[in-house]
Length: 92
Image 1 (cartoon, one colour):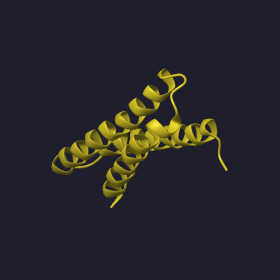
Image 2 (cartoon, one colour; image 1 turned 90 degrees about the vertical axis):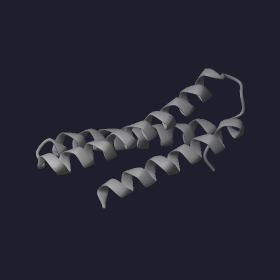
Image 3 (cartoon, rainbow, N blue to C red; image 1 turned 135 degrees about the vertical axis):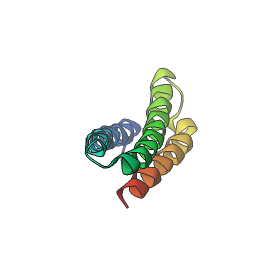
């Protein structure tokens, strides 16, 4: 069973990995046609917002030194699912 630190560390690591992948996709958008570029840019901006929400919730947990992970876990998990869903929709 993961400790809170391990669980948060795992989420942060995956968030960094997907953030890097998102940056790579954003760079590739510049190589597409103008019309496609506009649509992809909107989607990427939407995903970046979701990424920021997850990071914000993790930062709030870290700043709350002593608060229980259970207090934050539901919000982080919801934000994570939203982020992953948005990311998957871009890849399709």
